[in-house]
Structures are given as C-alpha cells and as structure tokens.
Length: 296
Ligand SMILES: NC(=O)c1ccc[n+]([C@@H]2O[C@H](COP(=O)([O-])OP(=O)(O)OC[C@H]3O[C@@H](n4cnc5c(N)ncnc54)[C@H](OP(=O)(O)O)[C@@H]3O)[C@@H](O)[C@H]2O)c1
Image (tube, rainbow, N blue to C red; front, side, top):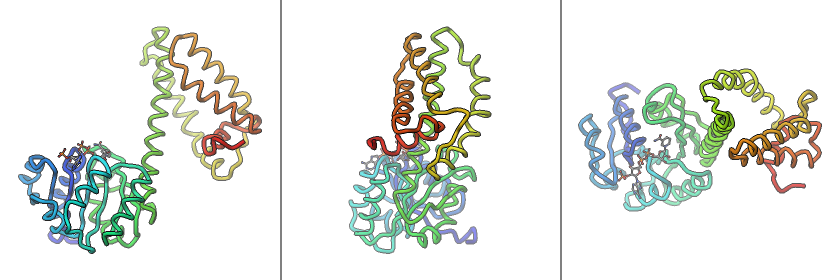
C-alpha cells in the first residue's frame, strides 16, 4: 500500500500500550482515530495528527479496522457494547491481555454481533512498539489476518499468525510469562541462598550466566524433542540421581533459613515422576507429571 494510501485505523484504549500503538500507526502514515475513556489521554496523539473520536460510536464508524487495547476483556466488551454501531464489516483486533478462555469467549461474542475478530497477544513493552523486534501473536480467521497483516506490521515487525484459534495467542503469552517468572524466580532463589552467607549477587553472576549459556539453554531443544516424542532417555543424569541432588537443595535452603518452597516443589515433582516409573529417565520426564498431575 502506498504511503499516502495507508489503511485507516481506530485505536480504542490509550493507556501506556494503546498510546504506543496509536503513535506507531501514526508514524507509519495510517490515518488514526483514537478514543479513550478518560479523553485527556488523547491530547498528545491529537497534537501528533490523530483524529479524536468523542464517542465510541464515532470511533467505531471511523474505519473498518478497530484495534482495542484496554485493561481486560471485560472492559473491552463493555466499551464495544456501549454502542449499537457494531456493523458487520468491522474487524476487531483485540490486543488486550487475558486467558485463552477469555479470547475464545470474546471471539464468539464478536461473531454473534457479526464482527470479524482477531485476538492478539503483545510480547513487548511500549517503547518497543513500532520496531522490527516487537512480537505480537495473532489468532483468528486467516483471511482476516492476511487482509490486515501489512497494517498490523506497523506496530510490530514480528507479527506472527498462529492459526484460526483465537485462544492460542493468549496461551503462548501465558506460557512465555510462566517461563520468564519461573526462570527469574530460580535466579532469585539462588541469590537468596548465597545472600544467607553474605555472598553478593554480583560475585555469583558470572557463574549463573555461564550456567545459563552452557548448561540450561543448550538442553532446551533436547527437552522439546523429548516432550514431542514422549520418550525421555538420559543415561548420564537420571531423574533418580537428580532427585537426590534436589533434596540437598531443599535441606540447604531450610538450614540457611531461606524460602524452601520452590526446592520442595521441584523435589516433590521429581519424586512423583519416579513413582510413575521414570527413575531411569532424564529430567524431561517431569513433563509427564506437570502435564497430567492426577494420573497414577
Ligand atoms: N504496558 C505493557 O508493558 C504491556 C505489555 C504487553 C501487554 N500489555 C497489555 O496491554 C493492555 C493495556 O495495558 P496498558 O499498559 O496500556 O495499561 P494502562 O496504562 O493501565 O491502561 C489501561 C487502559 O484501559 C482503560 N480501561 C480500564 N478499565 C476500563 C473500563 N472499565 N472501561 C474503559 N476503559 C478502561 C484505561 O482507560 P482510562 O485511561 O480511562 O483509565 C486505559 O486506556 C493490558 O491488557 C496489558 O496487559 C501491556
């Protein structure tokens, strides 16, 4: 599409993220209409060339593509429900964070109103929006995504379509969120243990980084392959051996007076996998108990 013929976009929700989205559309030359519950948040964007919609109905009728980014799905539905102007040719791109169930219910809700619906999960912070590195996962009808993909690339070069299921972007989102929190919490538990003997985190840092680079990260592709095949061979570091090592972590944490809940969780899951017959398998067998916690 020529720069002077960019697709018009409406952005509903001008918090930190919605404002960044609107700024990125404007920067790429899209005629951009904006609406926010607290109208003053539109002022800066209007001074940069955005068109102010004073009502949700005005926002909804400004163009076909409506990008929504508000606090939660409930707020998103309240906003759209506040107007009768939900014409069938509108495309809602919901970049509000939530759960897969939220996303699927909202896709059905939009369908009942005759609107096309794409769900998106933003894997970036506001300063990254508009860059090639910003990643947004999308799910929903493929033809709808393809029709608007070029416009959506204005806010994130790394726009990735996951398929017709509107719930998948949120699933990827929470999976990556969980990976981040558990990894960081592991680092925090390690530093708490060292801090119990006055060892500064900076002293430990080089070894932690080497551990990530040479031990933790290289193992991830192997584990992914094992999960997909359902076989967890590892003759050199069996789960039976590792469960004993994790018990040392549990006892050391208790002795040093730091929170032992995370080591206890790890030890309990390893023992559970062993009880299910995985003592001679590798760490990957822990997947079996996480995936299906109640199976015998
Ligand atoms: N910021 C990030 O780093 C980031 C990263 C990835 C994903 N996200 C997701 O992006 C979404 C927006 O985040 P944000 O950082 O922009 O949040 P924010 O700065 O707190 O803004 C929240 C927005 O939601 C609106 N809102 C809240 N309740 C509403 C209601 N009942 N009716 C109408 N509007 C309502 C607010 O309107 P008012 O201005 O009137 O209060 C504001 O526009 C969230 O789902 C968040 O998880 C954010």
